[in-house]
Amino acid sequence: MNAPLRHPDHRVDPQFTGRWSPRAFTEETLSEPQILALLEAARWAPSAINAQPWRFAWALRGTDAFAAIHDALMPGNQPWAGKAAALVAVASATTRTGQDGAVVPHASHAFDTGAAWANLALQAHLTGLAAHAMGGFDAARLAAATGLPEGHVLHAVVAVGRPGAADLLPEPYRGRETPSGRKPLSEIAGRGQFPA
Image (cartoon, rainbow, N blue to C red; front, side, top):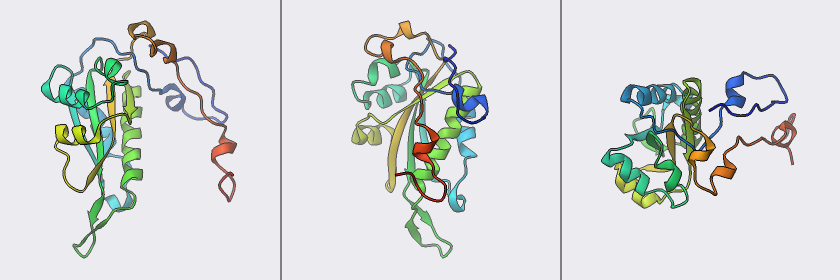
């Protein structure tokens, strides 16, 4: 399903305005290589001191691992996310090993992991898939379901699949199945100073 055209204020590649986060997915399944290609794109994200703190736990629909991740989602996300072809839990390591071998806090772990998620989302879009990240999950249940290691923090669960028509969704999701706009650039960026 193609998203309605969104218009940037400044010229950018169409991949940026064309990517959005639908909730409607077709029944199409995805293969392991298709998911691994998304994770490969995430692997090449920029990383402070090349620490690469991002971690992913993924599962294909129809597996016990998918059901366990799905069960950790908040009730508002479960009806539509259960139709996705795959679910990917996103976490990051909060520490890194310094040059002297000591374990130290990694201040940019969440920032870097956000870049990895963006790579995953754009790769999905470029291959005709959709990726919708959700913050609505029970962290304790998701940590248990995915074997989250100590010293890691969860950020999101991403539903991945082939985008479908809005009428595949129940209400209230159907009425919200449209790309969102963005704040004007003047509200988020300023010359020399942050906007008020």
